[in-house]
Length: 113
Length: 112
Image (cartoon, rainbow over all chains, first blue to last red; front, side, top):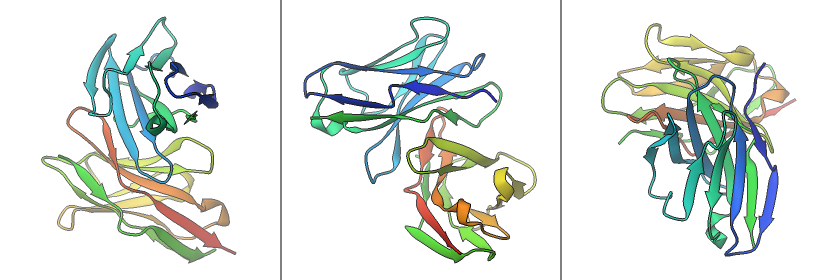
C-alpha cells in the first residue's frame, strides 16, 4: 500500500541554521499539508498546498517558513533561521480528490539547540 | 472556527472489555469528522471518518464511531479491546479550508 514518506527521521540543528524537511507524497495525490506537534501538545496545522500554490497557512507559518514542490514527487518545508521553539515533530500529509481523509507520513523530529 | 474536544487525557481498559474514547465537536455547517491513531514514534494513521450517511461508521482494526448530532459527539468505540490498541488517539474535524483541526489526544491503555 502506498505511503507518505519523510526524510530525515530526526534532524538536529543549531539555532539560526536553515533546515529543509522532505516529504514524498503518495503518487497522484493532489493536496499537500504540513503539520507540527510540539512535544506533549496537539497536532497543529502549518500550511496547505495545491496546484503549486499555498492554499492556506496558519499564524505559525511566518516568513521564516516556506514550502516547495521542486519536482513531481518531493514536497519540502524550509525553515530559514530556526529558533528553539521550532523544535517539534513535523508531519507531512496528503489527500486525494475527492476524498476527505489525509494520509500522514511518519514525521521528522526537529531538535533545535 | 471549528474545534474538537477530547475530555479525557487517558482511558484505561482491561483487555477484552469494550472501550470508548470521547470526542465532542463545534462546527459551523456540516461536520466532517475523523479519528487517527498514533503509535510511539510513528505518524498518524487514519482510522475512520464521518462525512454523511449512517451515524455508525466502521473503520480499521475493528474500531467504529458513532456520530451524534444532537450531542455534537463522535465517540470512538471498540467492542473488545486488545493490548495492541494501546496508543494515542486523536479526533479531528475538517475546517473550511480542508485543513484538519485536532483535539488534544487521548492516551488509551489496555491492560492484560
